[in-house]
Amino acid sequence: MSTPPARGRGRAGEFPHVREVPESDLGRALDHASLVFHENYGDELRRRHRRTLLRCDRLGAYEEDRLVGLLAAHRLRLSVPGGQLPCAGLTFVSVAPTHRRRGVLSGLLEELWRHCAAAGRPLAALWASEAALYGRYGFGAATSLCTVEIDSARPLGLRVTPAPGPLRLVAPATAPALLGPLHEAARARRAGWPARDRHWWREQILPEEDEDDDELGPPRVVVLGGGTPAGYAVYRTRCADDDGTPGLVQVDELEAGTAPAAAALWSYLASIDLTGRVRAWGRPADDPLLLMAADRDQVRVTAQFPALWLRLVDVRAALTARSWAAPADLVLDVRDTRIAANHGRFRLLAAPDGGTYEAATGPADLALDVCDLAACYLGGTSVLHLVRAGLVTEHTAGAAAALDAALRTEYLPFAGDEF
Image 1 (spheres, one colour):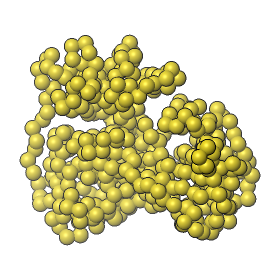
Image 2 (cartoon, helix red, strand yellow):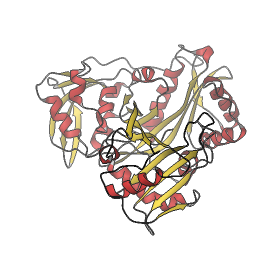
Image 3 (cartoon, helix red, strand yellow):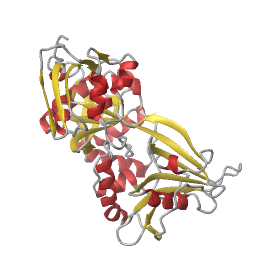
Image 4 (cartoon, helix red, strand yellow):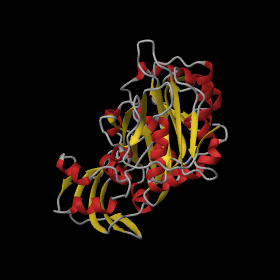
């Protein structure tokens, strides 16, 4: 596999000119985002978005003095198998409708890769509004979510006896300190979750208003057990509609360390008065609720979709930082047309106590695009399935199965924090 030519920034003054967006330009940035995303930001949402941008790295594409492209990046620490890594969490990625297909997004991302290298961030991630677009830039769908709905017009039937501990509602303002340890334990189990500080809890998880549905009430937080909780749920409610649609309980997050604790929380949510439906929009595909349900007609998966899209900005750093479930000795022929350092043939030596990844000259066992390597990185996508789909080429029989065994995780990766 030949090395692709390095992509340059062009001559000084050549469009697009990408530079950091100063605080004085945040009003223009929000006007630009409102235009591209077809949204009319109210005063409170505009203030909230401004607070978010202040905490992000911000890159703008300028034509003369006009902002025509925007990219912001949260400074995240993303859980990966065996630990966590710095990650650029992309948001507000947008190009003015007058400047599409003129290299604006490419210019923004090329500058972001340089920022990631300088800051030691081997990963980038986003929630894609245009999934077909980001594969071309090396992002792969690394986690998937499902929407689960419960018919709560009748008592929820479960095959697991709910834990008997007391349930109590806590104020959202005090929730981060109480729920933080439970969330950290969940991140240790499942790759794909960013770490949270108090700002993230307040702005991303527990905002007063739901950005997508202004008919939903404020966030409610229920915990199981006194002292240190055994589990918690974050939810909102909506009353019945005039057309007879039953009241709704929308579950934004539910975490529990044991099946009985989870059963107690689901039973509570399904028994809230004046509601007849529970909807959890984003649950892991291996959610135990799906096995606990006594009647799968009552607990249904209504949608399944890609969630976190991951980019391995520095493949070597990413692969050598994660843990491995089984040993593997493979030569990977990796195609990356955007970041030259990732492109080429490398030998991966994986072991339960660590791994190495160095340039190689021998024949390749597997040939794959960097976006497909990213899709498999957290353990949520099977290499063998990609071989069967014609997306990965297996040159050595058994190589895909060996890499799958090394990448395997006990729990599927999960990304419930939409940013």
